[in-house]
Image 1 (cartoon, one colour):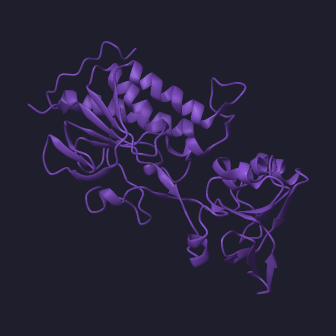
Image 2 (cartoon, helix red, strand yellow; image 1 turned 30 degrees about the vertical axis):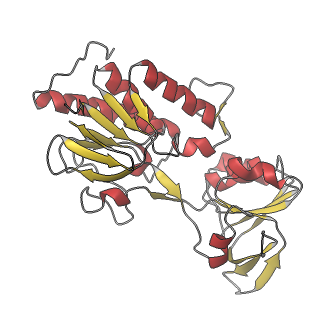
Image 3 (cartoon, rainbow, N blue to C red; image 1 turned 135 degrees about the horizontal axis):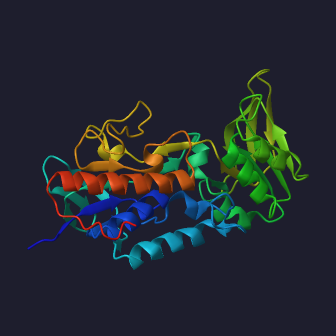
Length: 316
């Protein structure tokens, strides 16, 4: 007889792993479908300084390894498979991956969000050859080179500051006249002698044959165009929620973020959401983890209301 899990968690960032920890401690049978790119966005983050309990900071991948190990400790199963189809029409729900399919009494969606791109033809052609959305992944390859970071938020400031460890010079290009980043992040970037700013400017093309050797810049106020000689282009312009799998099934806003209807439960009873997949405001590791906790507790209480047996002696 095929196993039916108490909960399947789709996604493996702070939200997914925290939900797994709480659900497993409630004696639910837990399966985390991590996807092939495990760990979420923190796998692309260098040092995490604002997560409580790590007074000296911690590397993003190291933090995610700790989350994963803690989920395993309490008995959660973790499988690195991509979900390709879901059937929420009846319980138990069916979750299909590219390998097999699973049955479950409930689901937590914690698929997170992905970096946005400009959509330029040469940007796509030169991805991995000078164009990237992951400063911490690829910064090492730009030692002594000139690079740009596109964006005006905290991520752009963090990426630019990080890149000064390797690059000779970093230019932040932002299409507005003021930055959206928090004051502390702006101050950090502005005080760095390796960083300069091009405001009211946008990148209109990426130059180079086999690798990046420059970008075309247009001033959005004057219309003036210029060329900037750089060897690296780093995108930091926001994210798109990873929700295409749930289109037409789960209520979502116009940008694709999932909308819970009762606490963390969606319009489908038994399907819950956690983390950046439904959060376009905060997008922090700690808020994602908090969402994972909330979703697991909501799920456990909902299962009890359905008459499903759930052990709760380990909650405290």
